Amino acid sequence: MFRLNEQHTGVAATGGLGIRPMLNWTYNAGSWVAKISEHDGAVFASGQGQVHCIDAQTGVGRWTFETGRTIYSCPAIVDGSVFFGSADNCVYCVDAETGSLSWKYETGAFVCASPTVVEDLV
Image (tube, rainbow, N blue to C red; front, top):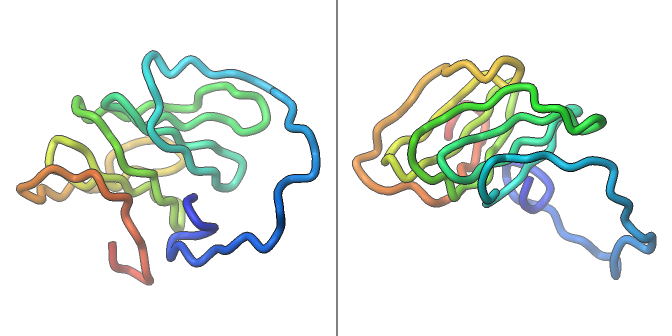
């Protein structure tokens, strides 16, 4: 999640990690990945028309949701739901556990911004 949480309030007061990162696993998304979020043991990666849910410990894919158009936005994960916008002019909400569509809202315009979720508003 960009800047710590769904409200983007995070600030880093340190100079960096202080440790050397290690590669634990790789995942083949089939194409490029634009943004990633992590929540509750899962990594959510958006990119070329798909959002992937990947197990954060093993790197094994749990599910893939397809929009058919590029997804530039970073997925926001709140209360078991994954929210993201797509170049197909829609904002989506899918179940974080199963990847099934909860709802889709047609905006009438290209969506490239990452959603912000506050209480029950997207």
